[in-house]
Image (cartoon, rainbow, N blue to C red; front, side, top):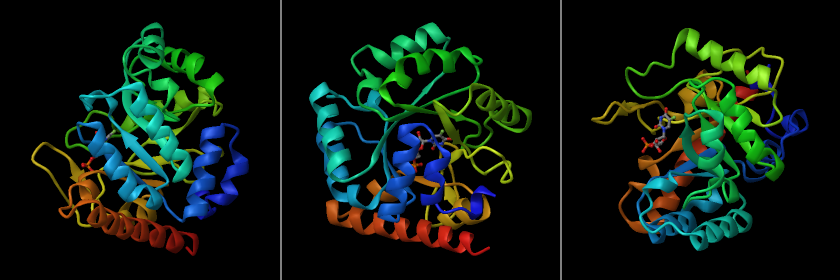
Amino acid sequence: PTTLKTYGSRVSLHSNPTAKRLLEIMERKQSNLCVSIDVTNTAEVLEIVRGVGSKVCMVKTHADIISDFSSAFADELVRFSKELDFIIFEDRKFADIGNTVVHQYQSGPLAIASWAHLTNAHPIPGPGIITGLSSVGLPLGRALLLLGEMSSKGNLATGEYTKKTMQMAKEAGREFVVGFIAMSRVDPEEEEDWLMLTPGVGLVQGGDKMGQQYRTPRDVILDSGCDVIIVGRGIYGVKGGKDAMEAEAEKYRRAGWEAYEERLKR
Ligand code: 5FU
């Protein structure tokens, strides 16, 4: 099963360059931590990157919340991704027909495909969304995740919907679609190696006032068999600036990595 393989040994099971690079980084940095940087100006984003970049395998953005987003900022982020060795994941959640997502991915003020190694899409429009996004992203070596499940209370991505999402990914093949946003590895005995990235993570279980639900790194990596923990407010929300964020990121990195090491021994 995938859950008993090391991240490093899974590199050769992927053909997509972003998936390969992610697994290599995870092994090299001993980190299955993705920090979600949900702040609204570029200076603050970059301050968080400087603080936690060395601890994470991935930085997740919501570029459309950044008031002063610019291509110079995107260049800076890409520079940091090389220097500090992480993947950039734009959590865009595309959800339109193929022809529209081509433009949303490639053009507009954000030009996501030009700087984000990884992005994601809802399967709701059908496989045309994958065709559209891959026509832009595949030639650039980019990768896509499908949202198979969500962390928020009452969401509709459950049961049959989740199964059909897996099916859609299988039919598309793993050239461009490399995994899922999911709460658990649905089928650990699966033949293909899919990457499972999981938001809704805190050091203690709980939630917020708008439906977010938190599980611990151990719940996600050990019990649910996922690969990457995605942590937002748990890291950038701590008081005390860059050093405090770095210390908090180290706690999550260690918790995620220990859960993974324990999983390998099962
Ligand atoms: F697809 C999803 C999901 O199901 N739940 C999420 O929380 C994405 N997210 C994102 O992860 C959300 O948009 C935030 O960017 C981040 C979680 O942030 P938090 O501060 O750790 O709650």
